[in-house]
Length: 622
Image 1 (tube, rainbow, N blue to C red):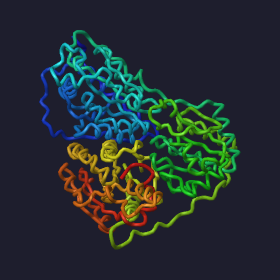
Image 2: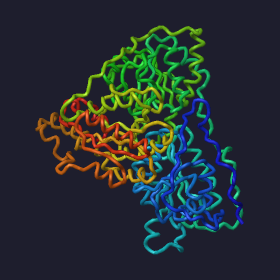
Image 3: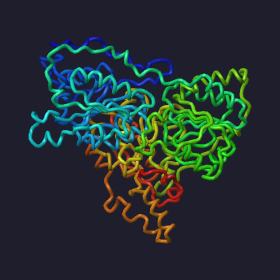
Image 4: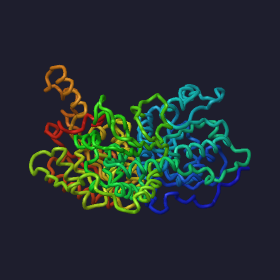
């Protein structure tokens, strides 16, 4: 006879300490009438896996139902009662992981995902690559089998069985396993959660044999104390490295801090600000990563960008000591600013754990950067140690002004008439966000970066990281899920290509009543590739006028709002002027405050000059 499931309360949230982000637990009204089972006892292999999810404090599991894990599905419903974790039913496996990705951007904690056999895993691969590149956690549960050929059903069980299903994603996941017994599944779940939650974060995968899930328990299952298998604190820097870095930075005449992948914790945010102020160092940030430093701070002279600008080039040429805090593509940053042949004169302090994940299959590790002082530590752990060391070396005195401070810049007004440019749309968004506590879940590519204003680590949660079109809807939903009930208004700004590839993800938002504003910056084309075709035409001396052929999503125009309404969302559009768009945002806000998701089809002028000057060639994204 199996031991009954523990009746103790769920483990306390580990992110409730000082400075932690206050993420409210979302509450949902069940739209499905759950019939309480008469035998909700721990009696089957899949019940054990479900019990482990609850004990690991996994709040949600996104899934597309599939027969390969029918046992686990039953356990989630009839053993756990569809609570802790709560199921989020999705219409495509790619969205399950994309939602978990958006959730992890906010919480830095793993959701669970369930994908059906090899076919579901193959559907999910692009989203898994995105979350891998983002260095964020998720626990993916898959299924195969039965492994025993003698009990397979004809046809369907054979095509849904693989000898090494984890091989599909092994090159862009941290760990995978296929436990061979119910008892072994306990350790598999513990390890999957522990590894995913250990910095540098990443996806893990546990594949469950159908027969294992459906095995009736014949003996008691001993559940470990999950607190004894916590991921632990991130690696701290060596004391001698901290001292050397502090000495270099204090003595530097022109210190620069490159703020890369850092935490969402408010205490960590404040420590980063304090370190920059203690050094008088210029801070540079990146639109590919989440908000990491106040963009209007005097020591933040240049807006965050996808690609370096002339101002950034001038700063890095002048810098004598650079502190890189897990900066994405550090070598590429210098190649784009200094060129291939110019030597790097600055001393480089490179703090990152990223090399622990490099495996050679994907080039997501970028070029190999030179570093005079490499520090294998979590960036915020280094900042925590570096700040008191710098203050001690300075004797508590304020740092002298080492750079010209940021001067307030007056933004232009959106044009009053005619179809919006992308810049007009961005200016309206800036005005809207300045008056509210808003989290931007996504920006469309080419966004005018001088219009952003980040004052909190949750003001912007970062790019999709892998550059795959279609991630935006799921990422936005996951972000809004994590922030439901927090008081923050979630706004997701995506291109029409991103919307169309992932639009059926929004059914989940409607079904689960996840409130958010979705702004579709609709240029009616795959404009990133329009820019590439223009470049090819110029290089090859061919007609530039042909650049839109094979790129447009028009004739007929796609009815964005009709598609949104078909998923159960409210919406309006197309809106074409800045004035109309500003009014639409206020109507969307009312819908969100009433608990609904709202889509705005915002038409932007693809032929305007700001598109030609934008950063569209930074990556493949509409």
